[in-house]
Image 1 (cartoon, rainbow, N blue to C red):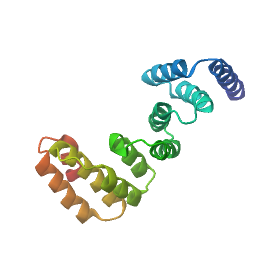
Image 2: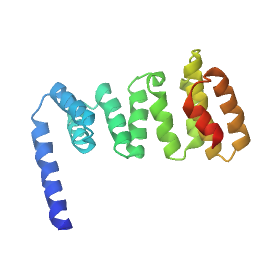
Image 3: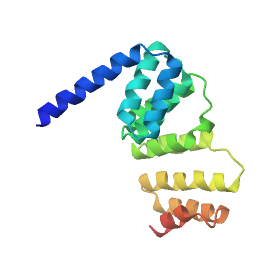
Image 4: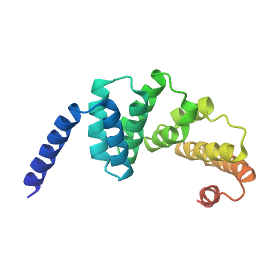
Length: 171
């Protein structure tokens, strides 16, 4: 039964890929967004791969592919696409949160802190608190719990009503 299912899934993927090849890039991007919104990350990924074969420098597709990969449980692919987006000229300040989350999930804590230093530059207290929360998670990952707690206390002062910060402090 498992083999039959695998063959069916492979056949479906091939049919979707063939259908996607004949579509215009705008239609592929719209279909990928629709699939992602439904939680169908596999179909969204197939659409985006087809689009990026046609237009490898399509920044919207690269960023959506990063989001889809992260949501679909492929942080390595997500991270590669976030890097690619920057190489194509995107400003990482627009997507530092999910990128840092992906780096933390990959246990690349020093890279996460470096990305925070480079991109999380807001003066808005809630934004700063969000960045500090992620920094604390990375510091914990590096085995620096005392530093993480200090950072979390700073975050709590900036956003005292943020439940995620208080959960981290309690943990």
